Amino acid sequence: MTPAEILALSCVELAAAIRERRTTAIAAMEAVLERARQVQPKLNCFLRIDEQPALDAARLADRSPPQGPLHGVPMAHKDMYYRRGVVSSCGSKILRERPAPATATVLERLDAAGAIQFGVVNMTEFALGPTGHNWHYGHCRNPWNTERIPGGSSSGAGASVAARANFAGLGSDTGGSIRLPAAFCGTSAIKPTFERVPRAGAMPLSFSLDSVGPLTRTVADAALIYQVIAGLPDSMPDLEHPIAGLRLGRPRQYFYDDCDPEIAAAMEASLDIFRKLGATVVDVDLPDLSVYNSAGGLISASEAAAFHSEWLRTRPADYSDQVRGRLLQGLAIPATAYINALRLRGEALAEFCDQVFSKVDVLHGPVLSIPTPTVAETDLGWSEHTAQILARITRLTRPGNYLGLPTVCANAGFTRDGMPIGLQLITRPFDEATALRGGHAFQRITDWHLRAPRL
Amino acid sequence: MSPDEVAAAAIVAALLKATAERFARLPLEAEPSDFQAEQRRNAP
Image (cartoon, rainbow over all chains, first blue to last red; front, side, top):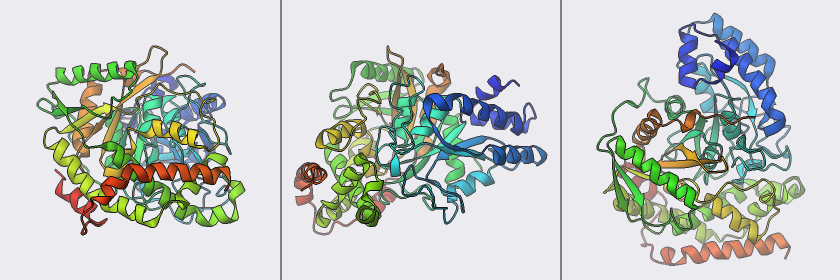
């Protein structure tokens, strides 16, 4: 296979090609390293590339019997998954020299499945921000238009996977940080149910909301990597099971408030695809998600401020202005409000499930209701105005963290100016399988996910 | 107050206002662990 043919493969396809000796791990690694070198000056999506260890590991993989379902597949992850003795900067100046104390459970599981990590990708400082700006290491860029943001905080994972410079990358999601870059960059992704995937060895931002999941080329890849990092038994979720009879909910409230018309049209077109696949579409009423959104904001800000309180006191100048400003906001939240936000969470989940999942199996909607902003217009310090802009970006994702619900993302088309449009499929707690099945069925008869940006 | 603290106070005030009514209606017995119980209750 040529390097271009290798780079066009998904993780599932590449692993099969290596297993069947149609290509080799070293050929895949050389191809992805060359592509990474090519796109890095334009996208700034990598923070570090470990070329020689990655090449050595790939050669070793070619001499070894297949180790697992990802044997020989190159990956680079958000720079907040610790590997013992190696620096994880977390996108920050503060941690740029601290070796990690232990290896993240998810990395151990990916290692055991045969994946080969070849580097780490850019991210928002301490995962605090939805745009992909990083004032310490340089802003990451969207491969579909380098003047636009890639989304964050898992910016480098979204940009590198979309640019075919990475086969998959772990992200993390506290208010939308997996789903937003997936939507902005046109990749697939899964944000699993809260606490379904271990967070041990991952930088914490908000221990009540953080979720670990991959950004990938296809939903089938997301399913495979989810299976590995969640430690599920060998059997894949049954992606090929037909979705005829699946009930999809179209939200009557919230998701389409002030929604960009092109995005709304793409969502309608995607619902038509699901109808062709035999699913039914049902309009559903939602509880007031703006309350969940605000309650999630109270929890996230409080917990992040607690993690950072010592550095806020001793090293305030080592944060970028926007991140420091966001952290300070957590110090102003009364403990009673934080506790009440946690106390409301069970009632909110019950209310949402009773109202939505008693009528449908999946809630369908856009990840974003706004066009992709430019890097320049969102290059902001901290102010109330900045907070309003950022809140607009996370408006359709933060409620999902508060409710802890699993969500699968897929590209549902492009705007007239060539930017991807992301859809999300939200299901009951621990029902990742249904969301993955829906996303995979959608990608079996659409080709949005196969399109690659010209760089 | 610094500009950051002024911005923080305004943003937090908005979050508190948005949640006040729901927090006021919380039953006495509501507690954070209810969330895990609801996760299990609503699992397929």
